[in-house]
Amino acid sequence: MGLKPIFLNITYIIHDCHFVYFLLLNGICPCFFKPFFLHRYAAHKAFTMNRFTEKVFFVLTWLFQGPNYLSPFGYGTMHRMHHAFADTENDPHSPKYDETIWNMMWKTKNDLLCHCQQKIDPESRFTDGVPQWESFDKFARSWPSRLAWAALYFSVYWQLPMYGGFGYVAPSIPDESHP
Ligand SMILES: [Zn+2]
Image 1 (cartoon, helix red, strand yellow):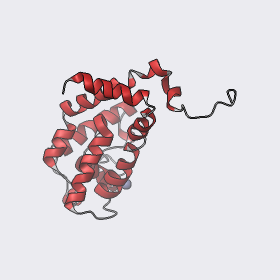
Image 2 (image 1 turned 30 degrees about the vertical axis):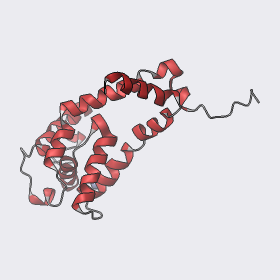
Image 3 (image 1 turned 90 degrees about the horizontal axis):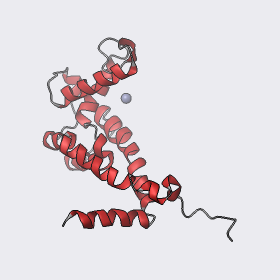
Image 4 (image 1 turned 60 degrees about the vertical axis):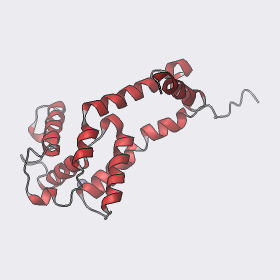
């Protein structure tokens, strides 16, 4: 299948008002996976899952977070450290020890990468039970994956202005001036 059918399908989705659903998937669903899978499950083990369900959640996290995929292992490990060392020098995500918030975020990004690649060897209490699926995680964090997602998003969102921008997403609101 060439690119043209893919493009036509994307155009069709927008034409047919299914853009509403795309926005919901793209904007709201990612908000579920971070608090539910990455925070409550990966970091805090607030509930249990079998290995298969865990893997399903890895894939769903990738599908819904797309180019912003956050590694459950990296996040879970760092989040435990963030709680244990809150606002001390060992806290991996504290604004107290960086000059600007951008410096803090950059450092967090670099630390996260080191944790994902297991270049840092934290105490076992920070890693025990944190879900890891190395091969999939590596793929989901890779540049080809992130760029493919970015291209897909761009191919949808660049068409928005042609259809009245975000106003287009609410076509079913009744217009009382036209009974
Ligand atoms: Zn927490």
